[in-house]
Image (cartoon, rainbow, N blue to C red; front, top):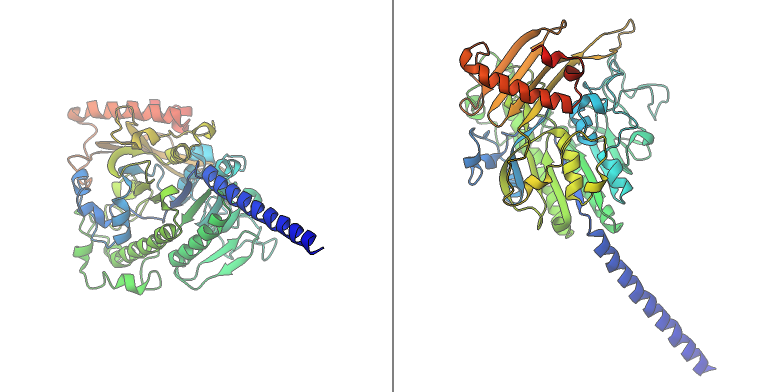
Amino acid sequence: MKKDQTVTGWKMEFHKISLSILGITLYYTGMAQNTEHPNVIYVFPDQFRNHAMQFWNENPFQSHINFKADPVYTPNLNKFAKESVVLTSAQSNCPLSSPYRGMFLTGMYPDGSGVSLNCNNTRPISNLHADAVAISDVFSQKGYDCGYIGKLHVDYPTQNNPQAPGTYVEDRSTVWDAYTPQERRHGFSYWYSYGTFDVHKSPHYWDTEGNRHEIREWSPSHEADKAIEYIRTAKDKQKPFFLVVSMNPPHSPYQSLNDCEEQDYNLYKDKALNQLLIRPNVNPELKDKQKCAPYYFASVSGVDRAFGRILEELDRLGLSNNTIVVFSSDHGETMASHVEDPKNSPYAEAMNVPFLLRYPGKLNPQVNSLLLSTPDIMPTLLSLAGLKKDIPASVQGRDLSPFLKPNASLKKAPKGVLYIRNIDGDINTKGLVTNYFPVARGIKTDRYTLAITIDRKKQVKEILLFDDKNDPYQMKPLDPDLKANQKVLKSLKKEMRKLLRKANDPWYRDGIDKKI
C-alpha cells in the first residue's frame, strides 16, 4: 500500500514538474511571440514648443538648427535626445489642441477626422467621428493592450455626466470639458482621462468605469504615477501595449505657483525677463505675457521630470529595448513672440513641435530634418510596430518610417506640410456653430513659410511669406507683390495645391486654391 502510494505520489510530482516545465516553456514562448511587436508609448504635453529643449544648444544638435534654444533646464530630454531620432521640423498642421488630437488619432486632416475646431458645446460640428478608425483601434485589434491617460479634448460635450445623468460635467455657459463614454474610446481598454480642464494642481479624471477622481497634485506628476502603474500592470499581461500620456502643462495658465511646481519655478525666478525671452522677435507691447515666461519654463522643466520618471520605470522593468517611446506636443507657444495668441498661427513658435522617437536596436540616434505632418504620425508608428499592412485606407498621412532609418535619403520625403486655420462659420438661432470657415491655409517647406488668409467672401485678405533660412525668427516678411518674390510664391502655391488636393481640403473642394 505504501509502495503504491509512493508510486502514485511520485507520478503526481512528476506530473506537476511536467506542467511547470510546460508552463515555463509557454511563458517564454509567449514572450518571444510578444516581442514581435514592440510596446509603444506616446507622451505629448500641451503647448510645448520645439525651442524649449536645452539640448538644442549642445553638440551635435546645435549644428542642425538656425535658432538658439530657450534657456530651459531639461536634463531628461537631453539624455533621451542622444538616444533618439530627433526631428528638427515636425509641424503641427493645425496648431490647436482638438484638431491636433483628431489628426494624431486618425491619421486624417481636420476635415476628415471631424475635429475642425477646438471642441466645446457650441460646436457640435467639431467632434471625432465615431466610425473613424483610430490608431488605438488598430493596435487593439492586433492584440495590444491600449491605455489613455490625461487630456483628450476631441469630444463635443453633451449632457452625459456619469455622476449626474442629464447634465454637463461642468456648470458654465460654454462647456469645454467632456466625459468620454466607453463606446467612444476607440480601443482604449484602460481609461484615465478628461476632456479639457486647466486647473493644473486640482485636475480630475474619469476612470475606465466612469468614476470621477478629484486630485490635489500637479497633473503631470500624477499622470506619471498613473503611467508607471499602467506599465507595471501591462507588463504582467504578457502582451504588447500602446500607451498615450497627454499632459496639459505647459499649457496656460502659467501665471503663478498655482500653475507649476515651486522646485521648477526656483530655476527661473531670479532671472530677468530678457534672460528668459531671448528670441529677438519678442513683441515689446506684450508686457503681461512676458511676465509668464518663468512659469511657462518652470512647467517645461516639470514635464521633463515627469517624463524622466516614465523612462526610468521602463529601464527598471527591462522594457526599454522593446518599447518605442515618442515625446512630442500638440502645438507650440509663442510666449510674447509676434502675437498674443500662443498658438493657431503659422509662426515657428506655434507650428514647430518636438518630435523625439527612440527605438533601441532598430533606429539609430540621429538629428533628422524630415518634414513631419501630424497625420503622418499614425501610419509611421504602426509601420514601426510591424503593422504596416494594417494601416487603414482612411489615413491621409504618409508612413515616414523609411526616412528614419540609418543613412536614409530624404529625396522622396515630403517637400512641404500644410498649415490650416479654421474659425466658426454660420451660427444658428440657438447659438450653435453649424459649420466652420477655412480662414487660412499655407505651406511650410524646408526654407519657406507661406500663409494665406481670406475674408468671409473668400477673397485674399493677407499673405505672409517668410524666408526661414535667412530670417529664422520670421521678423522680415517678404513682399508677395515684389517681382523678385513671384517665382518663390508661385512655386509654394503649386506645392500647397497638391497638399490641399491630397487632404481633400475645403480650399480644394470649393476651388478657393485656384483663386489665390
